[in-house]
Length: 307
Image (cartoon, rainbow, N blue to C red):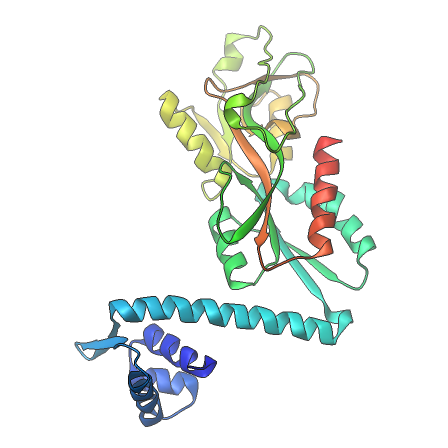
C-alpha cells in the first residue's frame, strides 16, 4: 500500500464515482479500477459497494478512509516542515486564538514573538474551538490558545496557563477585581474565589446583558449556566470584543458577561454566578509538534495574565 493508493481511495469516497475520482486524480477509470483490484489481491477487504450507481463505503472502507486521511495529513505536515527547513527565511508558524484573546495576543504577545524569532513568519488567526481542533488535526495551524473546561488526554498536548472565571459585571461599586487562582493543576472543586458585591440600584439589576457570540466556546459554557439556573436575561447584544463590553457597562448602558481576568476597571460591580463558571485558558498543540515558539508564546501569555 502506498500514498497514491490512499489518495485514490479518498478521491473515490469523496466523489462517490469512479469516473469522477479518476478525473480528479488525472488517471483513467481503468487504471483506478486496477488499483482497487490490486488492493483486493493484497488481502484488503472490499472498501466500497455499489448502490444506485454510486460507490458507497463499506464498514471496512470507513475504517480505511479514516486511516488514509490521517496518514495523508501527517505526510503533508512532514513535507511542510521539510520545505521550511530547506529555506529558513520561509519558516511559518501559525497559531489560532479564541476571539476574546485577539487584542491581547496582537498587542502584547505577537510583537515579542516577532522580535525573538525574526526569521519566522508568525501568523495569528481567530476561530471557534471546534474549527480550531480540526485545523490542528489537519496541520493548517501549529498551536492554539483556547478556553477549555476539561483536562483532556488525547493526541493533543494541553498546557493549562491559568484558571479563569466568567463573571457578570455591572455599573457601580469600587474596584472589585480580586486575585484569581493561577494554579493550573488545581481542580475546579478546590477553587475558592471571593464574591465581591456592593449595594447597587434595582435599575442596575434590570439592565440587559452583553454575552459572547453563539459560535464561541465561552457562549457554550454560559448557555449551560443560564440553563441550569433557569434564568435567561434580556440580551443587549452579542460580541467577543470585551473592550466594547467594558465601555458600554462603564457608560451604564448594560451589564456584561466576560472573563474575570479582563476586568481591570474601577467602578464596576463583579459577581460570580451561583455555580461559579470556571474554565482554563489553555495552549494546545499536537503531540508531534514541538517548537521553541510554542514555549515562548506560552511564557509570554502567562506573564501577561499572571504577573
